[in-house]
Length: 164
Length: 406
Image 1 (cartoon, chains in turn brown, orange):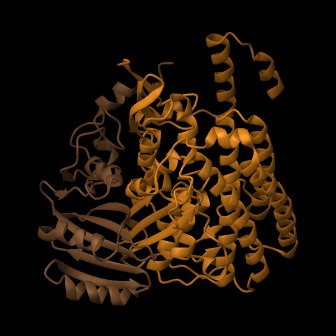
Image 2 (tube, chains in turn red, brown):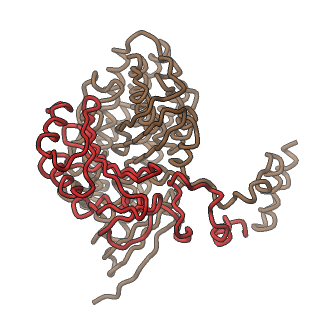
Image 3 (cartoon, rainbow over the protein chains, first blue to last red):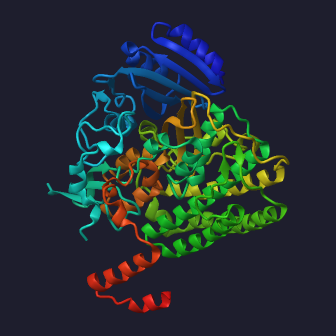
């Protein structure tokens, strides 16, 4: 089993043109930030060549001036590689990884629903996790969103089961 | 060519314990296609955590799920402790693992009952849930609660395990082990059970890998992954146990894996109690958590639970991301149901031991925001309201109960 430092060192040497930053946080935790332009190339290499073939989850973050998506990948020997990629504030988008990991679908829909990050190449399907009548353009996990911004019309339509 | 029929199962359905929607397209008796929709239990927990302090969030995260509450709270606290650079005392690590294994036992016994019920084997349901009470009583004894044990604090645990409690745990584990041996026998020898569950909900090793199945669901398709072994946390690095796998790839395999995992849990508990180190229970945690990011993993009864926590140096988290095991398994279910019989749908869904509360987390009670005031009732008003409601809507008169109240 390679240590986190060895992995970080190897990624740094092999993929220097794709990588903006790499660090070994502790045993079994490596973080890497990749250039959005080379996201797919680097992601595929990490998965297919470096053995980070298990997708744990995808986290989306609102960093106020931009968005960030983190792909938490793990290897068979328990090392977690978190791959960060940034997206612009206006019209944020990241490419889909569902061609490699069909299971990423729900996590990618979460990015679309909760943060309004467009996932290009994701097939049409039912939204997750917000209700179907959730108003357009309201993304609850964005930092500038709060509950008072919720369209009152939605409340009326659902009415919370009060008309029993 | 037979006609295709679409049957909506859920969001509210007698066969489901929690809301989820499965639109099943049938061709004759067989499932031709299935559309899964989850999200009905979305309660806004991730957003709510951002507005609360780390300590308050611990209580909130513990309530993501009622069955594996310790899993979520431990996973979350591990991330905070990593950010704050806290090293918990060894005794606390052992107690966390101990409660974690007791939780796994109660969860697997619960599953065994639910699965037995789904296939009409209600005797097994009664047996396993009766035995589950033993472990529920233990949890109540050790923590004061049957669910939401709240035994974790940032920096350790809040309650010790005394010598008498140790004895009681060992005695209970002996009884449970004896009972579980019987369940292993049922699972491996009882013909009706084997026939009913074999080849049902089949997912090949390759497909399970492709769809990212975790926990017993993945292990029953030969995926030898267990966070307790691969990425040891709490005291798991210091105990010896086996990762149970099976190559049946069907519901039967999932049952065998869970029953055998129970036996491993008993062994782990005995080892933990034998080695339980002396020492303090917790270290002092800072109120402000240093800025940084941490990923924490935990092997919940249903599989890998992963939390991502980002701190900005204040007392509130910047971002909390939770991914419960059911979310990872939900896509495998669609695959398992393909070409199966409609009658097998409930047991196949039950076989991943789904927990949609965990999966969905999020959004607060949006609908009642503007009318929150009038919706609040005290106990007496609520009792009267329900008595009137039943009288008016169902024609049942509970007025006598009203008198009993006084």
